[in-house]
Length: 40
Image (cartoon, rainbow, N blue to C red; front, top):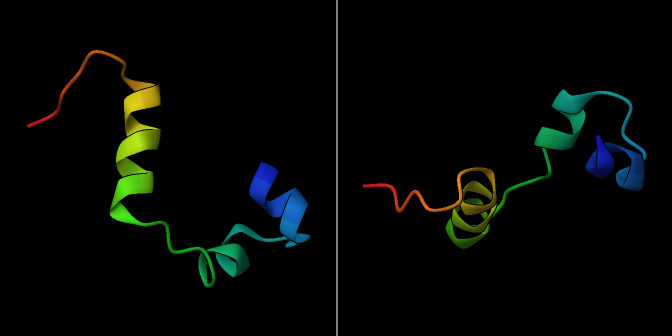
């Protein structure tokens, strides 16, 4: 929702067209959701 507001996209599918997070960004975000879980 925050990215949609900042980019002024009204639909999530339009934002997904341009938003391509790096593997590092995904790992960092995932670590925030599940702290202490090292994954594989």
